[in-house]
Length: 395
Image 1 (cartoon, rainbow, N blue to C red):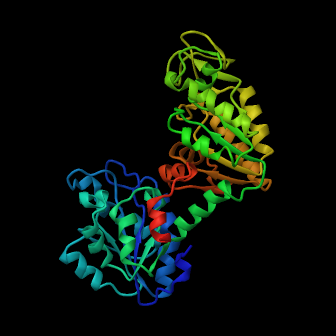
Image 2 (image 1 turned 120 degrees about the vertical axis):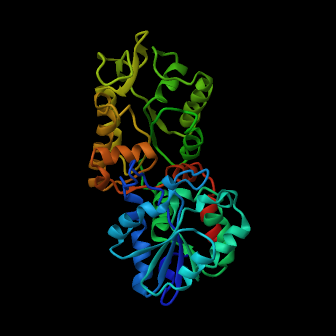
């Protein structure tokens, strides 16, 4: 696996695909710079070698070059994070952009305008990729968040750099950390899979059963498993068309000696709000008109015991509606237990938008071993899929 560290960038232009698809407020200010910070080691390595960087990224889902999706808005924040001046090309292709690239001196950084202003980016257009490829001597893919997309700048472009392509520091560490769970994790290995729907996590659960010892199932998806086993779940979220599938997953887990841990109680309410009346009830005996929105204390104790005795932990998906403070205790407790287990020597990987949001909300990001920057990409790796953006570098 060739990484950035296999190259010396002296007097070379590194064309780096970064993932600067960052959240902005209504005034265009960056509200979370995590993704910019994550790309920093790769950029600084190139500059310290005596090279220059051409950064390309997408932002949002523009239809027609709308100003709200311009990467020009993030230049100030990128300069602040990197501690160097960042030049901005008002287009990602064209004569003016080519001139700016050509004029770049060692130690300088140029950020190109949003790649998705051109539909050719998403369709994986070869000519568009070829045009972009002319901006660098070495192609560096450091965008884990889009590694599962066969786009021009993530997968197609690599063919124009047969001997001069590599993984950036971030993408290399993402691959390494997912592999720590899937291939080299010390036992016992525990996966905590939560979130709203079974349907979005089926393939993940099926693929990881060979690699884990314990499977904790929480969040809205737990009710589908509970109902499938004959429990009464009131008005709780359920996928009725996935009941047989839930039983199938439980059967497969049993056949592979994986211990499945479902919640045993739930904090229930009658309305989806923070201020309604609540009661703790058995997960399989929720009264009609009530719905479970968080793991109860007995479930939390059960989950924590498993987590604290684990050596490798994967967390993907919350175990309650943590956005509402009343129903945040389960998710927070799981995060705290993962942090404690990590402090005792376990390796922990957190990934997926909601889990990442939760560890940030509860200030636990530094308590776990690794927080993944790519939700969809990490899920597809856990599903056992080969990601186009990764394969293009390996080819």
